[in-house]
Image (cartoon, rainbow, N blue to C red):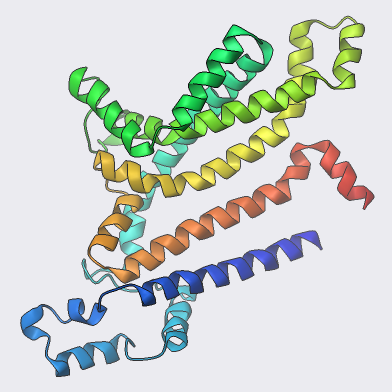
Length: 314
């Protein structure tokens, strides 16, 4: 029953989101027909009227939304005004790069964030203060500033990494995506570090930890068996939410590093008033976030036995 409710909620959220995205494009300044007609010299009243009729631009908002929604449900995201290609093909060609960038950034922030958070929780004092201060500073720096700083230091001055591009082959692509992934992951590292530290510190104060100490268990065994393991549920949940939100961060990172991905495609679409691409990319980003958060909510009882026991008792 709970899965059915969550699924229905997911569908309603996606439907409302799709309407909001479409309505935002409908209310945006500019006339798509003036772009589609092929130039100012062809923008006669007759040509504009013909284009509006062809693309249903002369109909009401609900009618236009219905035409668009039925197309989306059939896998037709429309045709790009600027590229004159199917939007789905344009996104599919760039999605692997964006997904690899998000996956790379996820690996970085999980390993570094969880590691630093655990270190801060175990080594209270100077190490803890240094980790908290550095992560707070890192989270306050805008993403585009981080990207510029990384390019200036590691690509331009030191020459360790390329300035832009994605390379060829898996290793070449990972090498080219190292700086973009680090830029994308920096804020997430700070959040994950704080969550891991806070959750582990709370676990250290629990009665079962004191009982384990009284039983003579080593500090290492206490940390791994009783503290870190019990803190893993909330930490992994937060990591999943952060991963879903990283898709939005690719817009800035891909543009800064000249990467041909879905994020940079969205920026180009906004600059050229390419409404079909803008609508499709925004909808897919929101849909991915909502889907991931729903799956995390369903899977959370599997990660935390206490939650599973509470829900079973209801």
